[in-house]
Length: 128
Image (cartoon, rainbow, N blue to C red; front, side):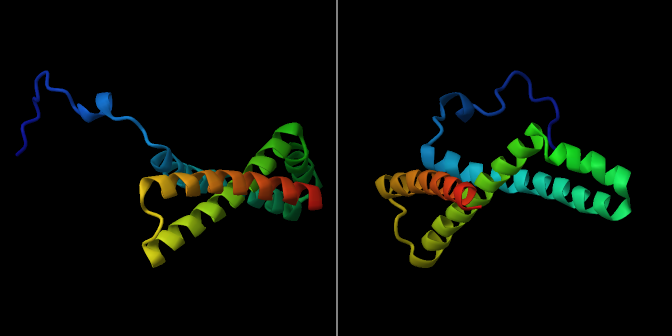
């Protein structure tokens, strides 16, 4: 069995010297936006369920979703959808072509993912 008493040894010495890279942070953020979309989906499902159960339940759910907080969540979800989509295209391109994996190109693509998601979000809000 493993020694449970580890003494005063550091758990992860690399954490103190590791500098997060922009490309790795955007990749991690893809996972975060995916989880945030799950939370927003639960909110939307709650709204639909409230609509099917009765007027009082729907009034509460609709009041929350159409409030400033609901608008903020829905706007953030819209951006997360576009960010997740653009980052997914980035990963699909990397996986199928094995191109763009060098650091300068990967950083340019990361900026393109962020910029593209912002442009697509604003475009969607203006059009809809």
